[in-house]
Image (cartoon, rainbow, N blue to C red; front, side, top):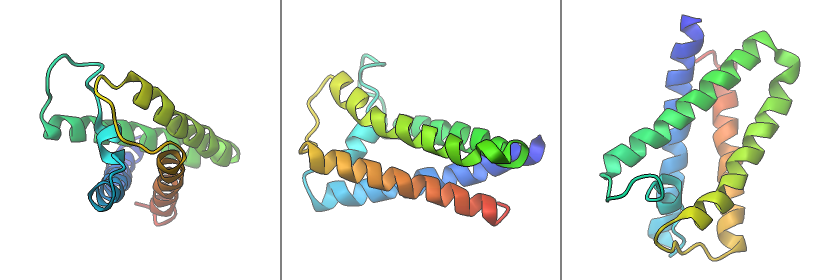
Length: 136
């Protein structure tokens, strides 16, 4: 179990930081605020949390997802691909949940923002899968 937790910690951190970096790049290159949406917790916290807290919460969620998927990858291999698909659907649907829950409006440009969100989350799960294949 310790190896699964360590793998989840490492692979979740790698994939989470890459996703964050991709969203940051999009946000700096365009007006589409994907990183703001990804880190947005203003509906949970009355105040203005520091960016470090928001990033740590994002990484915590990524590590939990990576750990669960690593356990499935090792112990329930027949359910691994369906589990990845379910997690991708949940992650992609968070676009709508987070954008509607945001206290302050976030510029997302409708279908463009959602398409980028969905594609980059596919990349996130591909990075996790690569980490598992490389035995990270």
